[in-house]
Amino acid sequence: MKLPIIRHLQRNNELEKLENAIEVLENYTEHRSVKDDEMDVIGELVSNLCGAVEVQKMIDDGVDEKDAANGFMKKVIGSIDQ
Image (cartoon, rainbow, N blue to C red; front, side, top):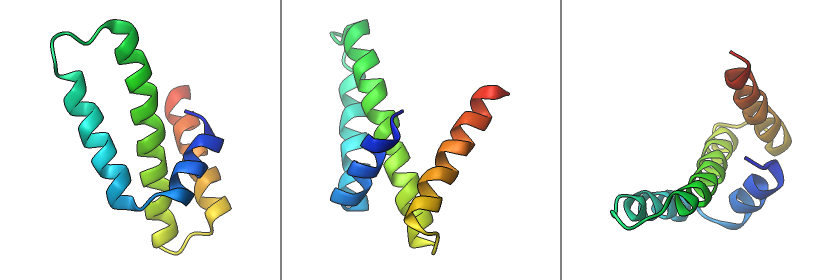
């Protein structure tokens, strides 16, 4: 996950578009001909898109954009450390 990419996606796309993109990419991975290296790239894309969705939802709940992004990354880092 890359915070600058998450912020870019969140700022430049509507929530519905982000969710649709996630759905399409997840569906793509279900095809039997998708290779491991492609799955890695798609996994990174989906992670960033999901991050953008989470940040946008926090903003919609009234959290400042900067605080939402930083809070999301702290949550991610916290879950990795466990």
